[in-house]
Length: 292
Image (tube, rainbow, N blue to C red; front, side, top):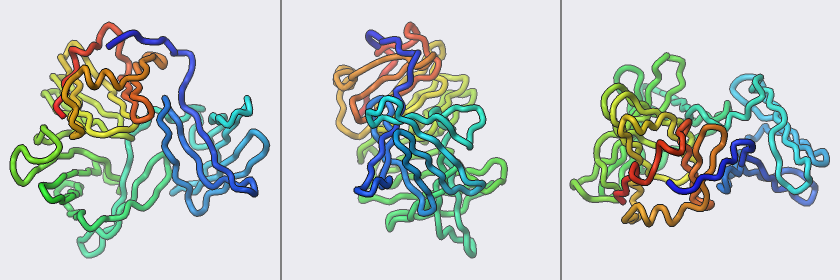
């Protein structure tokens, strides 16, 4: 895409904390490649501040999890040095996809919960949303707007009660109306055919054996797990933000570097796009399409 800084020896992920006048944690943020995201604090979560070390004991659906954050340089930047939920010592920054749980009463979905990093929190149902039970352990969410609807399908393939996003689709009332150009269904994991893959924050999006279009529609920390130049895969910007060209998108890029074998493209504080295991000679702006 352009000159790449080889920064494979370090990680750009860290944390910052906001303390009140009593020295208690009232908010904290994950910062990765310049993108700061506020983390949720559960009502039962406990923080202990000891100098340059902060220990968090957080509630979860299983046993409590203890995470230790350290700031060895005393500059307000913390990294995870211990996590009892991960015996391998990794901080799980790669993500494995969000999970969802649904409360069902008399065949009607009454509550939605999002599960991320072992933590379960309510995801309130807005007035514009409806949820319905589908076939074969699926749930269909429809979010209505004045010009169309967004349809998301969740499935529970192993029957454990935890659902994952399977597909999404923008369905305008009139074809061509609305912010997005692509009106076909987008899936999160491809097969051996050619697919359009939704790239969303919190998901590791996988293509398949055919020619796949990886469609970006939001800001955040986005990861594409198996882009393949040899399959003629394409990275598609269909954001609805009025982008008009690859040159315009390129003008927003503030950094490119490698973390291990993963290429990270940084768009200021707005977003990062990580291409997992993609060598620098296997990606260029010729592999990018801009629709909106």
